[in-house]
Length: 118
Image (spheres, helix red, strand yellow):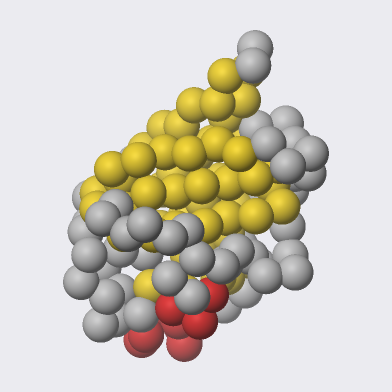
């Protein structure tokens, strides 16, 4: 997947224009890890390539959230999510049915990365 396949919106940005372009897989990504996330990659579960960092030059600081907006034509329902912290450590979640998930909140405690889904 290429970064151009996603639109990443900060929580302070207006959502009306993006809503018109939105796919059914759109979700909020919330960082409650205690560290800054430097990279976010999302790919269909059956893909062999993570593709580009959809944050581009940006980061996702602890306590912040972004809305990940897919192109309307996107059809895949099951996705994998990879994030990388400022130290280059990676954390991966597999088999996320983004047709049923509207929010992913990431946590890190006692050396273990977890997530909750709404």
